[in-house]
Image (cartoon, rainbow, N blue to C red; front, side, top):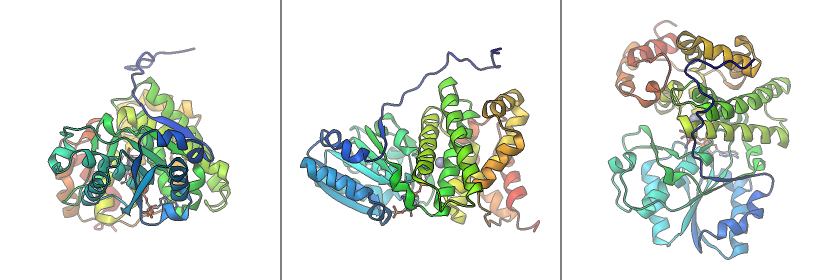
Length: 384
Ligand code: NAP
Ligand code: ZN
């Protein structure tokens, strides 16, 4: 029998995701005319190596050449992209008269392309104005070709860019929803075990943090659950195959699909406590993004069990998982990390968790002190 959940209405499904998403093998070549319709000239934005090795860059340049679209290449985006690099890419796009940009890569290259599209249209935009979304001219249109299966940046209006002080910060605006996202999971085959696990964990955390989120609605929870169901079978497969090396293209497609569902979920809600705290681990301890989020899953779940026990029960029932199996699924995707913090390290980090958006969206209202205590419980060098 259908039972309404407390504080939860199936008539709340407000969403806005204006991205033309096309997935499937060879979708870049097949959609060449749609790319070309965006203008006569574009700038391609990538990381240094992977897009050349996995075939994605060649597929895009073949498609552009076939349609007579002129293109330039900015291939200097690193992981956790720097504001300065996005600014340089934006300048290049402007100087060459690009009508649009194409981001090829993982979340870093895709977010950098979003940010460069803003700078291209708004030269001289200050750092403060960028993060406060105070710009005059609409960003250039963006096309995304994802090559990892994690961030879902293809379908979000968010870019996470490292500011001039070294902090990862995001901005959110409808003008950085890509106009076209082309998802061909063949490009993800070349990911190492570490990258595959970390990006899969990121996709899973998007689903969980979106489900347990004050902004969640019926649509976002539905896609979050779909992403998690797919990831559960992927985690089983990874455990069975004793790693990611022998994953098939179909398995990679499943992981990619899960990442898109996760992206659709956070496009509505944004993320919550684990992402908010993960930036500390990435900036100070160089832990890759998805792993840095997933280490906080057990504490996040305990927080939700205390604040929203009925919702946790429904969540596990929907997934047809016991609590133990749900947590085990994330353990499969999360390698051991070595982080060691003193009490002073954790106390020094507290400032960043005051008035933090991700914490505000989290049930149970954890505050900066709660985060400090969690960090000490997980990483205290003094208790080793
Ligand atoms: P990434 O930082 O984009 O890439 C990590 C590494 O993987 C890079 O060295 C990259 O090499 C390599 N790589 C990419 N595709 C590969 C492939 N197919 N085969 C082999 N290597 C490959 O990783 P990511 O996890 O996808 O993105 C993380 C970033 O996205 C973080 O900054 C995170 O904060 C952000 N994020 C954004 C959103 C959003 O909604 N906008 C959501 C979640 C996370 P190259 O440098 O040579 O390309
Ligand atoms: Zn993420």
